[in-house]
Image (cartoon, rainbow, N blue to C red; front, side):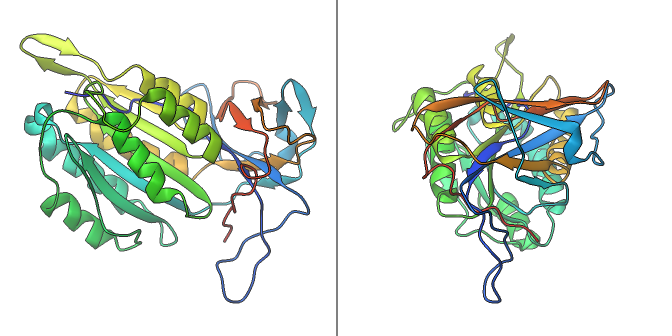
Length: 305
């Protein structure tokens, strides 16, 4: 079976251009120039989310240089998410547990959030459109997902990013798998991480260890790297009874992140390293680790209520 998401890190630093509100479209906010936006998750020593920090508590570095922040928000921002579930043969005995966990995530979506549900094995399924209708999403989980073999993990994440490509705001792939990629036909891991970095997608991965013929298997190790690089989170589980709390945790993180941003000095088309620091003892921040310094990758609209 193929491997899947595991705990990924922090939150996404996404490049974006913020546009002004109009009466006929979703409210957004505008900056006078391109802004590299960074979504950040902050936790305390016990792993609890910290929601009440201010702009002065953060520092952002671009290739090691401290940047003045021109954007900072701590209110809830809508998400557009593809939930992609591994339905290869090794998941047969665990699907009921996964279905309940995926429902938990859907039920925690807010009215302005939109989602599609997908599954992958040797074929990739995806619900027809993004929707805020939680009942419709749950029906798809119950009625429309099919099993198969093998597991096209990287193809499934690439299809998820394609579905999100024209969507505004924070674009998230939440992927679950209990194994490694098995012969993806279209893309490999390097293609996926390069696209996620270039087009500013955030990936959360939940991976479940499994036992097959007496041997314990682990999710694809590159899921951790993909989640960390894109500012998402990676969770690797040993037991199915951890699924509900993990999917709930992902939903809570997505709704309790900070967004901050700066205007890049040089759109030179290269990959820049990002570092976010929180200036509060005992706090840990997770955020996207890089961005592509180009006008295109710093022009993704961020939707703000």
